[in-house]
Image (cartoon, rainbow, N blue to C red; front, top):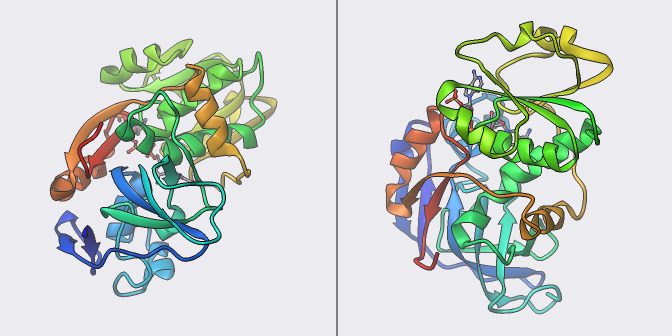
Amino acid sequence: MKAVIYEKYGTPDVLELRDIAKPTPKDNEVLVKVYSTTVTAGDWRMRKAEPFVARLFNGLFKPKKVKILGFELSGIIEETGKEVNSFKKGDHVFASCGFKFGGYAEYKCLPENDLIAIMPSNMTFEEAATVPIGGLTALRFLNKAGVSNGQNLLIYGASGSVGTFAVQIGKYYGANVTAVCSTPNVDLVKSLGADNIIDYKNEDFTKTATRFDCIFDAVGKTSRSACKHLLMPNGKYVSVFGSPGKSENDLLTLKELIETGKLKTVIDRRYTLGQIREAHAYVEKFHKKGNVVVNIFENQ
Ligand SMILES: NC(=O)c1ccc[n+]([C@@H]2O[C@H](COP(=O)([O-])OP(=O)(O)OC[C@H]3O[C@@H](n4cnc5c(N)ncnc54)[C@H](OP(=O)(O)O)[C@@H]3O)[C@@H](O)[C@H]2O)c1
């Protein structure tokens, strides 16, 4: 099968499209024919080993544990292991590969108990592939902060993958959402339901008179100390640089929100597996709008 391998840390040029053996599922695994995957911030961070702590996880001098990146995927189950009960051949699924990565390949084995679920019925493969990382991160951080009906929520960095999902989930929870983004993204963020927009190119959000029950830094570009005075007495500050925690069924929660029209995805650009270097170079600039997809097989 075709897969993108990386054997040293560095620029997008370290990513190489190669032919390798197709994997065989273990008894508890499904084999997914991968239709779409994405380039997330986590992918380029692991490629560059940035921050340095990535090396403690994946090898001090060169990638050892993970050689195929790709944090999330969608596709069709081609084969199931003997003990698999929840899925069958032909199921359309979407999944987070977690820190095992592996989406940049034509086939990927995943344990049936990992973060894998039947795809939302109203999404294409490329749309579904964008949901697990950005969607789960947004959902888990907003849950961690206990965002609820009627609260004032500020989302800093509302135009990225995590941010675009967070604006919509915040609205679903009934919060009054103030979104901070730059001028070119104002219309996009408004279309996702934000009640108020602060354009960070023209206005310093830390000077706003509003006070918030929750501030979510969805891009890791502000800080608790910069925002402290904007919080209500029991207000919560959460950042993507913290730990989101997790819950068993949260991929299914997102599926339900999508199928009931409460959540959609934003796709900025599309690439093929052969264009993976260009895709990484673009995403690494940190200005994508929503998500960047990599399509592997045609069937969108
Ligand atoms: N803790 C976790 O479990 C977890 C999970 C997923 C992601 N993350 C981290 O969360 C961060 C965001 O991930 P992502 O996938 O959402 O990133 P992303 O989609 O690449 O973010 C790009 C967006 O960020 C905005 N942005 C960049 N600099 C900004 C600034 N100074 N102020 C406001 N907005 C800014 C950009 O808007 P402009 O073009 O307008 O600047 C762009 O729309 C990454 O650092 C990632 O590593 C953490």
